[in-house]
Length: 540
RNA sequence: GCCCCCGUAGCUCAGCUGGAUAGAGCAUCGGACUUCUAAUCCGAGGGUCGCAGGUUCAAAUCCUGCCGGGGGCACCA
Image (cartoon, rainbow, N blue to C red; front, side, top):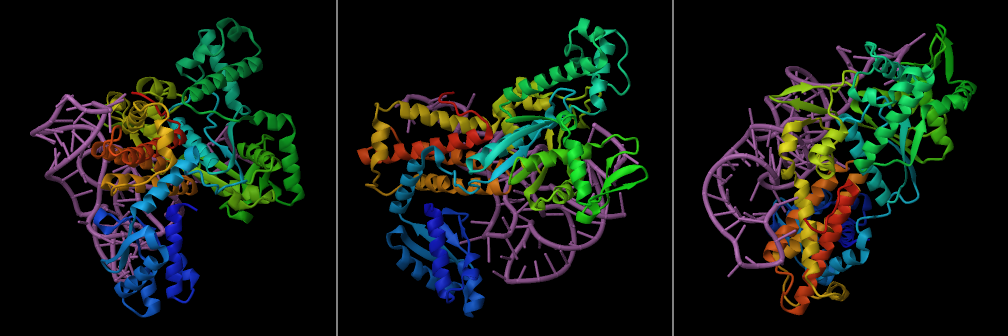
């Protein structure tokens, strides 16, 4: 249990004792960070919640709670104060903060890695872009998001398998082959084919003209997929499994899944097609599995894929999809349930689109067929991986973001990511000025021989909040909170750096303490940046 | 028509499972480099939190309606 949680627990305990051990009521009390420093280090709304039960005024209850807490926590608290309508503000002692710092240092790289998901295995599927064209900015958001979520979940103790589903089965494969051939022969590309410049680069001209169309199609697709992989890896995104849709059909998995569903009585035939009765499980209409022309639908592959994932024993399936797939949620959950799974184990996360703003404000949607898009490669080339990832990850996945590439390119040096990296690099260079072994000696035994500076206290409290930021980010699938947290830590560190001399500080114990504080901040920033897939440079 | 997401400073966005005087970055204006990195810091201006009701001791946050933007409602992939 971390120090803040310990404090929270004490508040709950004291609150419970005031209401005769009613833990349900006590469980609702919060420990918060007050908006202004004069309101204390932490505060609780406990008295506001307990007052009705005790038939007393909130402020009176807060007074009693304060006395109880001071008795319970002893030297951890300097004092408590009743404020406003009945908040109880807590002022923690320097010693409490230093003990907490010792804990942060001891946790090292694992600071914030609370083992919440311990043991739970999760399949995380993201990007899964059609392998018929380059990765563009729309995919980039899903890539950055899924990647950061994967890193975060791993850090929080989940056993994560990162997976890219390759749509290599449908008619678009043939279309790609036909487009490649047409270009090689100097013929016009079919209306519904692929028109981007990349098409001509997939297969050498001679082969493109002579290969059997099926072989050509597959070769083109393989080449395209290889490019996608390179683009993603350059962007810092990698996968454990590249899962072929085609393999589901070729290996009999589709038939097996259909047979299983039929056996379970989940399917029915109508108008020459085979359907899954998804309406029985929360969908607003039934869905076709096999079309009347005998072709399996995309959904049919999805089910075979679900069954495959089920057989691999995952506790949780997470899909990161663009918001245009949002409507698929009910049928996916229905299918999973029909196969015998728990619908809550399937999680579909829809991220909103990136809208390109060109010039004066005209928006353009991205269309792969027309070749009207900004590729991930282009974005990375123009603004760099770190700035691009920060841009995409600093915002909630639930908000549409506007991206003016010209503006982003021009302003890339203003990206807040550099501020965070700068803070990290500054600490590194600062600590490098110390004689060898000084840092290790400093971390040994921490004592305060003079009162902590307000900037030291503020930074320490900010660092202590980090694990809770990560908990929030993980539970709410919201990695952008890591970025917000990192930025705040960088700001608080910079204030500390401005106010508190570290190298050469007197006396020796104070220098030691500040080295430890700086080290803790550096560690935390490195962790945050790492979870975002952004580099943490030693020098800038 | 129905469903989902969004609407917060000039711009881009945090904050939304209710808390105290609503924040950050950019942009604008004014200051600061003999001092551990100026990719920095200090200060200033800038808000009917889309609108209207409701719940509450307390609403940007929860509920209802409306307005505006995006997405979805296939035997497409």
